[in-house]
Figure 1 (cartoon, one colour):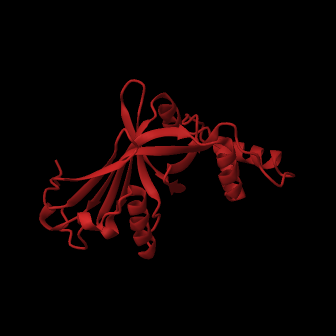
Figure 2 (tube, one colour; figure 1 turned 90 degrees about the vertical axis):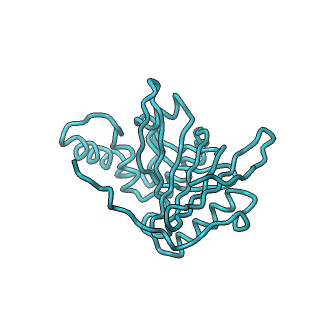
Length: 213
């Protein structure tokens, strides 16, 4: 057994108090995201998304946040992928942002739903052409033969060689996660971390409370 008991960091970069918090958690998220951008962190929009299968088995993977607003958090995927199908069968999901350089994390729980085809198409058309072809070429999460992607990509490139605008795949698009709970976690010395959670009430207002680390 590998003993990792002595692997630890003592967080000292910052503190988070109730007075620091915005009334709206999306405003607070935007503030923290701006801090991430200012610190030139690689893949600042990387987030873990956790889903649950119809049989109750959880799974998690890292995806990229592609937009956020008071409505929620948007990412894009193949709807026939494992995560896509799990979201469609059970839209309750969780997100996690971990910005180790700032010793911060944000935990989000909410309900996912598909964005409109217009929104998906607008984003799809903004992607590099090579990424558009990749979306068409990959039967995401399905078992494939070793040379499948190379052959499929060549086929798609030939199919759309004379086309200026590659169409949006019918199986591909965005999900928006509408949050019901957002927690802001700031690492502190000796594991006395600062944790504040916003919870959405039935009257659509956010209420904040502090949690023990």
